[in-house]
Structure formats: structure tokens, C-alpha cells
Length: 362
Image (tube, rainbow, N blue to C red; front, side, top):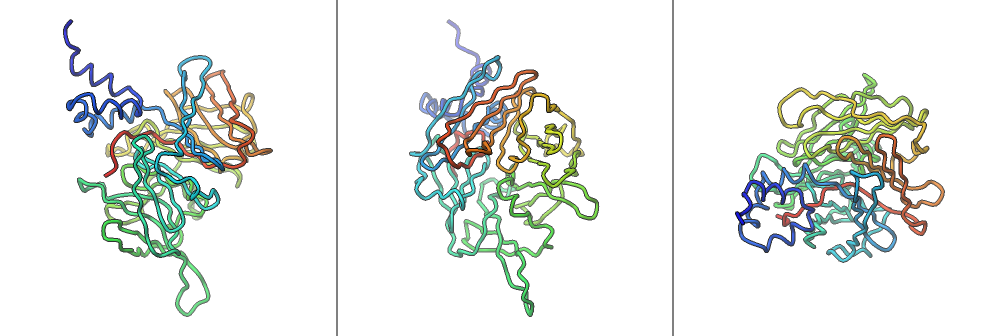
């Protein structure tokens, strides 16, 4: 039998799940080297299916989706509580969990963890100042090696005034030093944005509002130059205070925005037409609009909602039930609507969407 062409072999590997690739590193040196190539990593990320992370009062789970191409998709649970993060340290009221380059970013009181649960690796980033409010993690993407920086700030008292204001600071993990950045108060993301900061290629992005133009737009923080800058005006507006706008990464190299209308229960999904870093002007297109005829009333849950889009046709959302706090997953594809409730005993949880990474921590 003739050997499998290397191009086909590489294509097959790029379609496998991260937990399988972790095991296949030991098959041969050629495969191990391939899994470290940036080209292969990017290809795998664009094909990987995101997973949801749930933190309950007792355990941490990853939820994987099976059969999204069929008519009856299902989910599988993977417990992550023994992957290097001591669960007893997680207090749901003061722990922020988010995604970062296919890894998990956990912010505790006075320390931060970068976590790869599949490789059972944890990198702790500790700082002494307990007044430092952490918002996100990034790095200078112009350098060959990732040197982590923590984006956050302090509440400071203005000189000769009894007025407190927020002061932006960057904690450089290599030098263990804080760097303060002068910026207007309007550049600071509001507290509710802490759970919705999106990390993309080392920089942070979030949805903000311009009071002068009454427009919603995406703002970013560039860790290579330590500056704030606008990214794009959004194609949709919040008509009422309870409407939801949630930013996410789409297909690994684009952005998506979910708008959830409180009055009509309509959900709109907008995506960028081109890759984020291709130098083109940002153009938004409407990928899908879901009418209220088959949608639940989840508008009031948008601040506890995560979502991702599979194959341009399927929307997966996760949020808590209002009456008992139990997490539910909604899978919507064309005329198919499926709700999966995950145990009524779960009183509270934190969740996020991430693409599992099979690369060792730097």
C-alpha cells in the first residue's frame, strides 16, 4: 500500500480534536514538529469547534457539541477540575474566566492564571498590589515570543479633590512592574465589559458607546504600543437599555456581534466580511436573523450569555434559566430549535466560549 501523501496527512490532523492531537504528539517527531508550526495552528483553529466552560459550585466542566451537522445534536461533558486549577479557590462572585488564544484566562483576587486544561498546564501571574483590578490579558504581537501583559487599573483620588477616578495600568509579567497609561475616563471599559472583553492576536477588544454620536462601536487596546484605539462602528444599535450586544471571534480571524432585542426578542448575527488583519476596511454583513416566533424570551439574560456560530448556519447559545439559575443550551439551525437544560441542581455558574489549544504554555 502506498503511503498517504503528506498534504493529506496534514489535512486529516488539522481536523482532529485538540485532546487527540495532544496524544498524537508522541507518535513521531514529524507530527510533533507539525503541531508547533504557526501555519498548522492557525488552520486548526479555523476548523475547531468551540467548547463551553461551566464553573459550578463544585466542579469545572467543558461541554463539547456532537452531531451539529445532523438533525439531533447532543453534548458531552468533560470534567476539568483536576487539570491544575484548585477549584476551592474559585469564588464565583470574584472570579473572571475568559478566553485567550485558545487558552483560558482566570482572574482571582491578587493573582491571574493562564490555563491549558488539556495539557494540564497552569501559568500563574501574581502581583502584590491588591487594589489592581484586572480586566484582560495580552501581549506585544510584534515580537516573536509572547511576553504576557495584564490590562487593568486602579481607583485613584484626584489631587486636591474628593473625587475618585479610574487609572489604567499595565502589569508587565516579565519585569514585574506596573506601567500607568494616561487616558480619558471614557476610554475605560465599563464594569459590565469585564466578562465580554475579547482577546484577539494579543490585543483586547470590547463594545463601547459614543455619547456624542449615539453609536455603538468596538474599541481596542493595542499591547504593542500601549494605546487605546477605535476599531469599527457597529452596524446595529441598542434601541433600549436592556438590548444586548455581545462581541465574539468568528472563524478564528473575524469578528461577530450578536444583537438581542428586548422588545421583539429578535436575534441578529453580524460578522466582518474580511479577516481582521488583512488591511481592508471593516465591512459588516448580516449572517442571520432569528425571528421571535420560535425564540424563547432570553433578552434579559444577555449579560450571562455566551454564543458561537457553527458552519455559518447554526447558532449555539448558553445562558441561565431565570427561575432556578440552571444553565441551558440553545441550538438553532434553520427551522430546528433545541433546548438542553443541564441539571437543575446547579445554582450558579460562570461560562465562556473557547477553542481548546494543544500547544504548551510559553
